[in-house]
Image 1 (cartoon, rainbow, N blue to C red):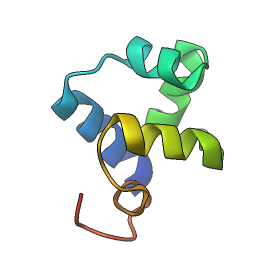
Image 2 (cartoon, one colour):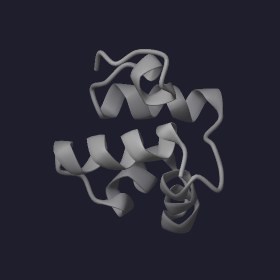
Image 3 (spheres, rainbow, N blue to C red):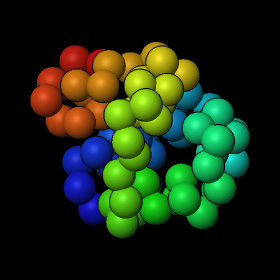
Length: 69
């Protein structure tokens, strides 16, 4: 797994969301979202922005560019 997928999974759990809830927010299938957490796929820019907004964390943190959430 890459840093993005590790941080995505950690912050989702920390915020109390299920994979299905995040998939619904992103308008993707739960399987597609699971691939993000497994490091098999990466979200496009629009989905990255949605993730950072709904998880209340910076995109830089998710991408590993910053250690500050």
